[in-house]
Length: 134
Image (spheres, rainbow, N blue to C red):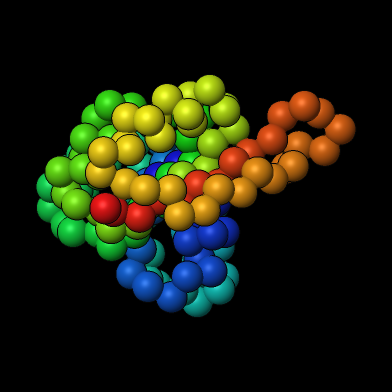
C-alpha cells in the first residue's frame, strides 16, 4: 500500500498487488516494471482504504507492506478479518504508530522494530515494524 514508484515491489519475485492513490506514481511504477522486465505486479490506482478492503475480501495475503503515517480503522479491520499473517508497517509518525500497534496487539505480535534515519539533518525518522499474526 502506498507503493510510490514501485521500487520495493519490483525487488520481490512473488506475485504482488501494489496500490497507490497517485496516478503518476502508478505510471512511473509501470514504466520501471517494463524497464526491468518484471510482470509479477498488479498495479492499482485507487483510494488506498477502498482498495485494501476490496483486495482483502477478494484474496488471501500472506504478507502486507504498508507505508503510512497512520493506518485507518478500515485497513486494520481488513488485515484482521482476512487473517494476514505478516505485516511490515513503515511509519514516520511515532505516536500514530504506537496507537496502531496498541490496537493490533490482540491479533499481532511485534517481531522486530527498526528506527531508520531516512531524513538526514532533521528530527524526522521512519520506523519499520514487522508484525506476526498470533
